[in-house]
Amino acid sequence: MAVSQESKQWVLENRKCDAPGSWFCPGHYPPALEKVLEEKKDFAQYEDFNRKEIDKDSQKKYQEQYFKNLDNKHGGAHDDDPSPDHDPSKELTLAKFMENIRRLDPNQIDMINEDWEDTEETSMMWEIISQGMFREFLGVVMESPEIIHVRSADGRGPMWWAHEYKRPKMIEIMKKLGVSDTRTDKNGRRPTDL
Image 1 (cartoon, rainbow, N blue to C red):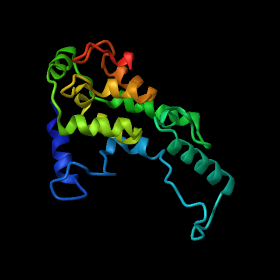
Image 2: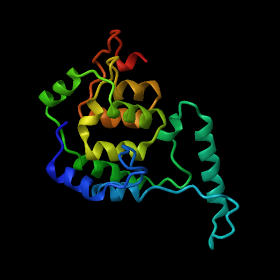
Image 3: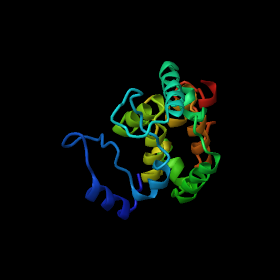
């Protein structure tokens, strides 16, 4: 995959993984994602008596939504249901995010789609999409937009998995970045067939 030297250098200088040699490096994203990540809301125990200010109504609504999402096996709520304190003005951040992503030309996309192989990248993308990890998805896409075009040995890739696990926001972002939903896997199935 084509990754800029600047991005490679940033990763080398800022990589903090859970174990030496691991590919899993949680919670450390490039500066370009700061605005997107500022929107996150950490889960807090409702009975946390150490917190000085507690908005019990807001916290209760948030926890209800949190547990509803856990109960939803395909997790569609992760992508589309707004949190109780959803602020539509913050949606501009996603638009800004989309403006800053490096775009691939059609030839690059075709070349990536020719390789069908089970790799760490395909495993990571399946995990992120199947678990509805939207912030992680954005982080990976920002760092390396090629990753949304990778294909596993069965010919499937992120677009298939996003359809399978009902991730409409991920689908929307991938379409805007040139991921086709008309390509087929080894059995002739398109992402939209799932």
